[in-house]
Structures are given as structure tokens and as C-alpha cells.
Length: 268
Image (cartoon, rainbow, N blue to C red; front, side, top):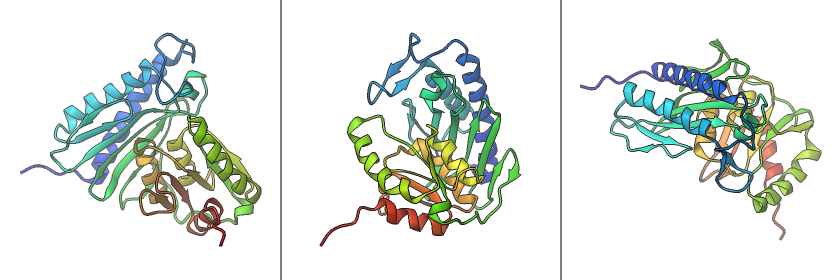
């Protein structure tokens, strides 16, 4: 009979692998830049991927194959493996590649494991600061092992610091500018950090009041959304919600107010 690990054990595995991948990325960052040889592009000319992204993903997937050989894999840089256990690991080996290549701080490693009900456990590690956020479903969220309080502080939209992100595709950025034109006049201010996982963690630990983005990939948000939810945020994401292709995380009342701002009003 297979030994089924607890959500906490899976969280701890995600933390260990995220920290190991972070160390690998730090070792590769010195001397690397947006113009370095080996930096390629994906969805557009402004969407880079480097050998460091791929090395981080390989380190994580190699570790998972050893620790959890029957689990599935889904990674941003191509890792794909079906699950025989009902668990699948969702991996962003370097969230914030542009920031990484420019030598900025706001990049991270994001690892989550999902079952049929969604994210079960996950970790987000920011190597340049050493901070790690983590969560296990039903067990709350942590920042560097210290539990994050719940419920989160509710504020009116006019007092809210709101994070967002933008697509690499020009036509989608035009749509996002329209959304931003409704949100920006109604809130305290907007922040654009460049890492969805870190933006979600900022909601969890109160360094931002909300985060939204209209189009996002599962590996960008799987761990961060769980961490935000376990810290007390209301998370809206996926088919059948107000953001079927995106995500919104905020305290419940603020989330409702932001949905109103983000939903175009229909005439007639």
C-alpha cells in the first residue's frame, strides 16, 4: 500500500526544492544579462527564457522524480509527466526572468502540488532576499516558518495598494491598459513587480492589499494563490469566475469592489 504523505510533508518538500533551485539560480546570475548568449524568447520578443530557467526546472524535476516518482509534472519550461498517484507538481522554476536578467530583486522559484481539488501545498522562495512563503491546504500560510495571520486587513479601494502584471503580447497590453484606466483612479496606488507568485505572497503577508491580472498561466499562480488563500485572502481565478483566464486575490470585501472595477459595464 502506498504511503500517502500529508500536505505538510509535501509543503516541506516544496520548500526544500525551491531553496535548492534558488541557490542554483543565484550561482548563475553573476555576469548574466538580458543580452547574454543563450537568452532566447518565447511568446514574444520581450518574453525571455535563459539556460538558468531550464537548469532550475531540471534540478526541481530531478528532485521530484527521486522523492515522488509516481507524481505528475507540469513545468513552465516544458516538464510534463502524467501522474499515477493523483498528485501533480506545478513548477515555475524562475518567475520574473526579466527581473533576473536585469539584476533586480523581484524574481523567485514557485512550486506547488495539486490534487483533484486544486493546490494542496506549495512554496515560493525569493533567493535575493532569502524569504520563503509556504502553505498547506487547511494548515495556514507561513513566511519563513512564521504563521501569517488571518483574516487580512480590509480597506476601502481608495486606501488599497494594488499589484498587477502585464502580458508580453502588445494586443493584450492594450486590453490591460483599459482595465488599469478603471482601477488606477479608484485606489491608493498601483505596483507592478514582475512576478505573479511574489505579488500573491505580498497579499498574504500584507505588503500589498490586492493583486489582479487578467491572463495568467497555472505555474505562475498555483503556489502563490494557495498561500494567499491560506492567509485569508479571497482568491478568484479560472473558468466560471469573474476572471476566467486570470486571478484576483484580496480580502473579501476589497475583492468584491475590485471585481466591480474590473468588469466592463454593459450598456442597454
